[in-house]
Image (tube, rainbow, N blue to C red; front, top):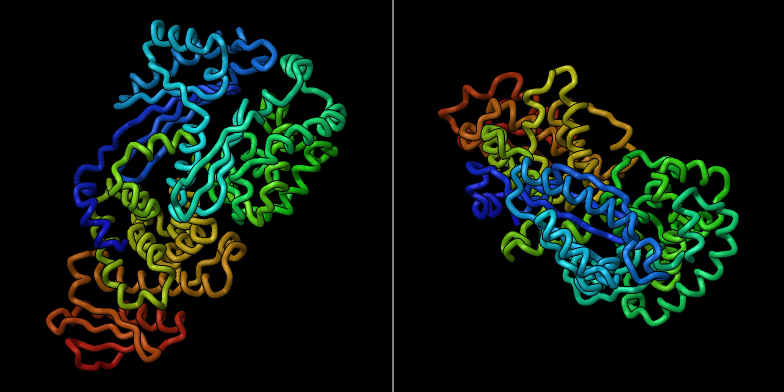
Length: 520
């Protein structure tokens, strides 16, 4: 879908950038979390996120009941969350509970108490609901996802098959750390972090149980190359992998890991050395206590699934729930372009110029970044207009590469960020783009930046003036044809920008007025 299509479908977004505000409360076996989202068209933007590790499911396997201290903590934080949603103007409340409340004898009583005392109507999800929504969350973030999604919660693991952007089935397995770990271990966790040395012996027993549970998992026999990791514990492991490998971009969303490397790390986390122990201390204390068990489950999934690549997903059940409520037309839109629109919608001049610039560059599309990335860069081409000129390129680069948008890889982030930085500074350099981009991608990003720079200078960043010129690339040359009536727009600086773009792209610059060749 191109810019013109997106603008046509979302034509009112420019004038009505008001978001629909949705509050999602996730009552899990280990934690209770509130995320408030602003939903603008296809874009899902988290504006508030708070979590409390209540431990509702601790001891559930042994007793069959919710943990009393966990219930007390959950009721307290749910009352707070209800108030926060009210004062933040939430339009729709979506509280839901997963495995612990679903399986506990007193789960229905807990839901009734929350409804009567706090006014929240909790939806208790089935395991299949969780599997479907976790996969839907992955798809919401990456529409062309293809592989298996794995969502590890406190009490359960949900595995789902995603076939070219569509959920095709999933199952829940009782493999969450709180369901796996023995009662004495869980009791010790309430007071202190268990000795990792003791986990070495325990892990052998866990491996056998994990392998038995996963032996008949149809999701892991689907011959898919990619595992999409969902869930806080697994994201913590991905962050440790980043740190161990000195990865330069600390963004977990769409972080890709070689499956063999992750398999090795999960083995080591079950018997951590001093370095890993020190890293585990950087994780929240309650999360660190279950990390070896989470690593054991991930290890089992990797061995059974024989994956080649693992992708971290920052979207899961919560985002899947929000996405599932959108109409099919919105769901089919490109999340990157929709997110970029939402990000710039509050500045109409940026919107107008960026959209016009994207259309102006259409004829040069095959010489630039892939179309959707070029369109995204053009939409944000004026993002640095209100920044200090001495820092504009650097700040625009940082804003783009860290933008909280979905639908792109780390490499694609770096490419769009580099293009926008080069729109402000011809020879812009940054360690992140140098590390994440190969020569071809970097060259195309720089070329796009140079052409955006040319368009901005010719038009004075005016969407209306761009229509008096036409850009075309053919026969190894960049041709700028300007309407004869507007030839006064061709200043010395614009001619210079045309020449610079040609040099960067390895082409010859050519100028004409209403089709008649002119000297540059």
